[in-house]
Length: 202
View 1 (cartoon, rainbow, N blue to C red):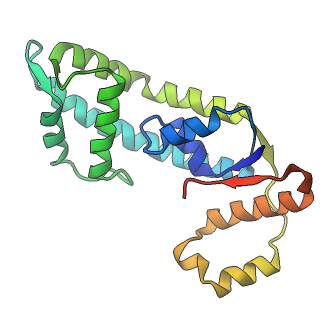
View 2 (spheres, rainbow, N blue to C red; view 1 turned 90 degrees about the vertical axis):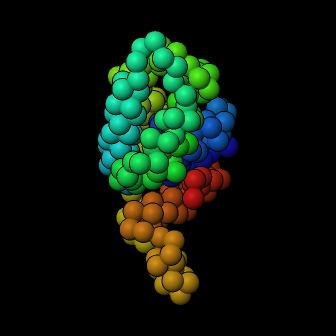
């Protein structure tokens, strides 16, 4: 099969802490053909930096909480969740998502409910230090796996009329979303033999 990937699918694969990472990883494990457009590329680059900064700031705040605990004490995951309750949203990263992120990290680093403080500090700091390079590696990997298509040249008037009639811009389509959908539409019309499927997390 041939699939065109929306930017949120690609970002969901890049960031292991994203709530759709598991489902995206299962989808991408199959040996299929993947496509993306210049508009997708631009959006991924922009959001990649924003998400990376938000996660990094969250990890820094959690590290500060962990470092306040003595090395020979035990760290309880629930104590950290209580600390997160006092955090404020970091950009698009909401407090309820921070709890989910902590659970993912705790599981990924294979900690018990109550774990040795020194080992938690060591592994958590390593995770934080490797976070950016790991995300860059995954970003490069997924883009090398895909085929880039050009942006659309013009928008189909029939589809524009439908978007207007259904008032889709108000609730569903934002500027970049609309551009990406027209990229796919134009490419599909020129390459009908591909039977291209559009994939989005939305």
